[in-house]
Amino acid sequence: MRVRAGDQTAFVYLLLEHQSSPDPLIAFRELKYMVRFLDTWSREHPTSTKLPVVIPLLLCHTPGGWSAPTRFEDLLDIDADTRALVLDFIPRFRVLIDDLTAEADENLRTRAMSELGRIVLWCLKTSRSPEELRSGIARWGDLFRSVQRAPNGIAAIARVWRYLLLVHDAPEDRILPALAAVLDQEQKDAMASIAEQLEEKGFKRGRGEGERAIVLRQLERRFGSLPPEALTRIKEASSAEIERWADRILTAATLAEVLE
Image (cartoon, rainbow, N blue to C red; front, side, top):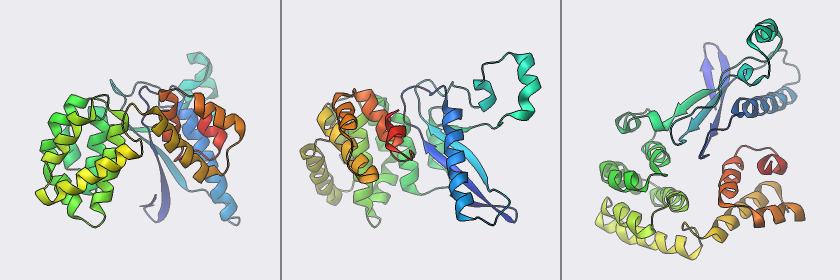
């Protein structure tokens, strides 16, 4: 994302993190992303002797809040005295954390972003707490209805439902009625149709093969035909691995980086 910083152009790198626990090496991962971006930028601007600003921003909703180190220097295996001596010779930056678990619903509703964006953030925050999700949907009913009336709104909400059905642990019949209750009457038929499509395509929670198929299709679209060893790993992967790889597909530059 390009932003203005005075008279200059700055770049903000956004990593959407859906892991169930903090990654202790997130600062190192962000460093790799930053270097990859800057390398691409320098090759596209061969005459430039300056580099743009890249700010690593992490959006997360890990249970209990983010607890892993956010400064790169905190990852170095050295004592405090030695670190003080080498700080001038190593990369120094901090990953900016947007922790949704610490954000009140009222603050999410007033964020300066689209109505769909606010709904997505709230769903990310509550997705691992089915009861909170089910009980809170009514309070967000006005935004759900507004998004549904917008162009392509039905398709946008369908993506949100698909995510919820993939990650929550409660039976689908405890979530879908709550979603239906906040919609206008004429929109309920559309929701029921989408729910049937999700079921037919194996998107519901508990259908491990459906989740596996989604990741496989996304990987093939991103990286082309997959080697046999990658197909074997995906076939034998746990649900946690599948979920982690699904998160990485958007940001990883290579197949190996997704599956590492």
